[in-house]
Image (cartoon, rainbow, N blue to C red; front, side, top):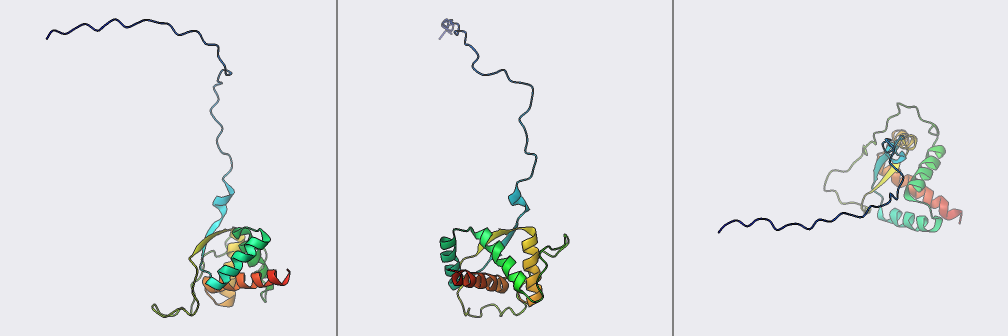
Length: 161
């Protein structure tokens, strides 16, 4: 079969449009100058006991505070109440590694208190350093101290209401 020539395409010209936007300058879009603040926070995994977690949830609903704000306030209050108190401003080279419980029961030991699912709280660097210092001072692991911190803070909130 012989090849057929392409049919002629209709020719048309687009109507001239008026520019609606300002002419673009040679400038590139601006870039972020500062780092977002949340990247300066330290993620802290918390394993609260179910009864404390339930009380904390109720306290958050009543106060209207967020989880991070509550943890920051609770840790500050707890560290100030310790004897001797943990310094309000920790040095730049302060330890930020959360210690494990030195008296951890062997694996497979039944739990005496059920634990709620873990939650991640982003703490400011200084608050995380104060929490780690409290763990060392109390000679307890992070889970035990965080539960004590939150329990004491919720107790204090309920007395004020």
